[in-house]
Image (cartoon, rainbow, N blue to C red; front, side, top):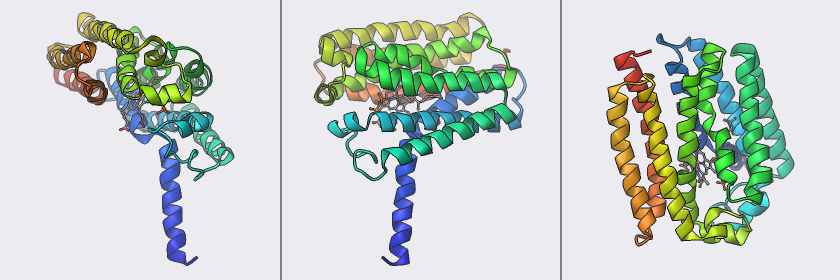
Length: 299
Ligand code: HEM
Ligand SMILES: CC(C)=CCC/C(C)=C/CC/C(C)=C/COP(=O)(O)OP(=O)(O)O
């Protein structure tokens, strides 16, 4: 093998390791964490805290994602959506991936303990265990309520960002957690309807597999309404102002429109379109929270 071929293989190996980190999901989580940091204080949060907390939370979230790739490698091999991942393809073996996950997670803990604060490190460790162990190893395989409960881990980043800045758990930060917590079931179940056969083949008890599509569509609708209600809390408590209210109302109208289309069930493309909209929705919602915070300077 010549040196050029070796370089190409090494470049591809890095791409595989990056894939273990679920970089796009983690990036959006970090957006919600940074917004948590910004909303925690009327001034700009200290830049050193923003850097260390983003790095630490990012490393630990990536570590959790890599553990998920290891634990789910046999399931992933059976699903069309995931069978090309590095572990099912044999591009990375499980031991190496686990060492990689351990290194990411440990360096994340060190960054948070040394440069952020210990409470943030503990809470992020809780989220890591919540996703990598409680959701991935237990709930995902056990109950169709897996993502309702497991969603707490994915919803944690705004709290983690907030605590990084203040050192305390404050009630306003929990409102942001609540929004992502209520958003997660419609986000995931929409995809799940589209990928129902995949999950059935892999023997994973996701809601459309265990309770059928109609039941799942109804629950997407119910959780969407619940989510819309939770998005009003930041305005009702005075944490955010009218810019947020106007922005989130537009987003909510579109979300409910998608939920209705999915609920009706006649448009086969609606669930996957709703899933992709849900990703844009959560990014825009946190962007609007940020704009509102700095333009209106309410808290
Ligand atoms: C336990 C809770 C959650 C579950 C079960 C879940 C499930 C999923 C699944 C199965 C995908 C498809 C991944 C793929 O095909 O690679 C996905 C994509 C995505 N999720 Fe979630 N999700 C959860 C929480 C979150 C949270 C909290 C966020 C961000 C705040 C998020 C952001 C995203 C993004 C950005 C994508 C698109 C990734 C891409 O571009 O490929 N998810 N989610
Ligand atoms: C420390 C911290 C903030 C931890 C959160 C970690 C994290 C990356 C959560 C991601 C949520 C997610 C994409 C779940 C899907 O898992 P799945 O196994 O159901 O989906 P898959 O089939 O695509 O792997």
